[in-house]
Image 1 (cartoon, rainbow, N blue to C red):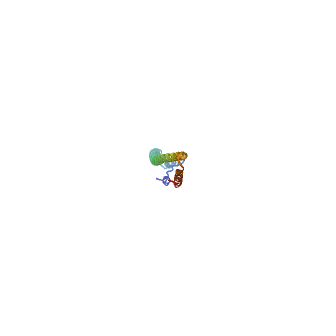
Image 2: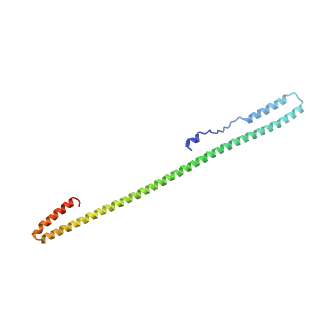
Length: 181
């Protein structure tokens, strides 16, 4: 249910007026009383008629007041029920939105955690590859030093005929290193 749907329904407005049915009933009672007083009858009969009509007017006024009160109570009950219904709907909507936000936050946290784990794994792999490269470079450097030391040692003690062979080996080895072998 969208936010706009709450505002498209009609509103119930209750206004309090200073005049109303009470003044109307008072006017009827006064008019009836004046009509009886001015009617051409005996005093006793007129007094009984006034009493009878006053009782009837009072009963009618009580009935009218009771009816008006019942109608007002009904309208208030309907308005209260409508407001409570709208509040319940709004609460439900708020709870739904709250669950959506919580779900989105949870999903975001999981995605961030997964991304962090992936990044840490990649960093560890990169460090391991770097260290392996460093180790290989050190080993090659050590082998070259040993070979160079071995060649120098062999040159010192080798006969002159072997010098040409060793030089050729160095040239082959040098061209192999340059080609990446």
